[in-house]
Image (cartoon, rainbow, N blue to C red; front, side, top):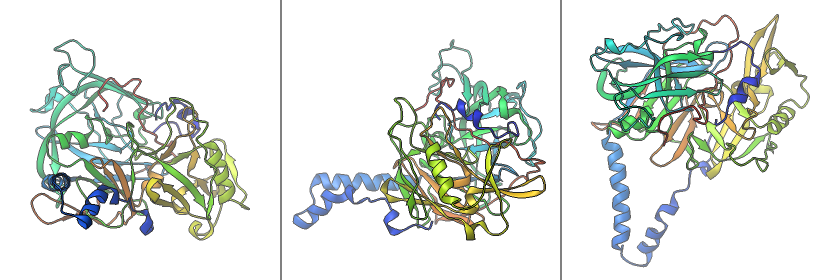
Length: 481
């Protein structure tokens, strides 16, 4: 959704950016160490009882809250879409809007009817429509005195926002409040409930957000701030502070997006790093064929963002330059590769199954959780002139944050990924995202939520790659907590 050129220069603007073994599970014994000791050597004390009781109350509260799910469209393949999006029903009467699913930013915004340069048509097979506050009986501007507005503005005026993304694109406008329909788990086309939602009404968009190739009505930020859809629903007691996505990558695309608690086995968890704007975790190693990839953060400078970010708003994956060069040596010990300067990709001609010839890349995180990236995941197949090429989907980290690792859709697809904000952890497991996931409900037995596919991409050329990880909020005028 920017220029067809894939030069990584645009990334310089980024300021802030399973197979699962039994040992991959997060160890929880420390929660009950003291309790276990007391059961062996004497009766349970009142403090032990209070600990157990408070734990049970938290679990019961999560189960008493509801859940909702939204349909998905798009794919991780940059030759067709390079992003995933959902459909939202907003307003009274409700109207449909399509927004990119982005765990790398925090705010939902839609192009306003007054937007000067928002796109009006899309190659993603969906019909765009501007959000017009005057068309909804329940729409209202968010005032400067509202708790979700921390901008310095005059009382009686609307609350303004301005966002900048990692690819250099921007969105700015004012905040509004309206009704969001919450789909039924059993039928995503039927509303089961509704919630009051604060979101941005964009009056201006720039950069890639103006392009038709990957145009949508807006971006759905699913980050950790109070303006995130997840936190707004949790604060209204609609859903718990947890959500999950399953991005289908091998077939028609689409998948599953659930806000609520999923009930699936085999998930590996790693804790989130504390006090981070993004879903940032601690990576311990990268391995290919049992050999560690060079990876050194010791030279990171003060104030530089490090760690590993899970970001559904980014198409590919980004690793430090030294790691990337070592990875090339490990993956291509004898294979001849060429660098396509116009696409800024390292590619090669190959006939056959890449899974049969090339190695799996294994990421190991804090707590021992492992994430496997198969050759079919990290290679991009594209037609280039008369040749069919495979190109490396891993890229070099942006110069502004050279030690930062970003795991985009290329890594996240074909996995059930759970963002458990209450317990500050992320979990995942290899999954058939064209099937269904089981979701806990507040009114009865667990419910199966089935995969969906909305829209269909019609891209005539290789589009640019999305990287919508929000910047360091240098331009963001709203509360991020």
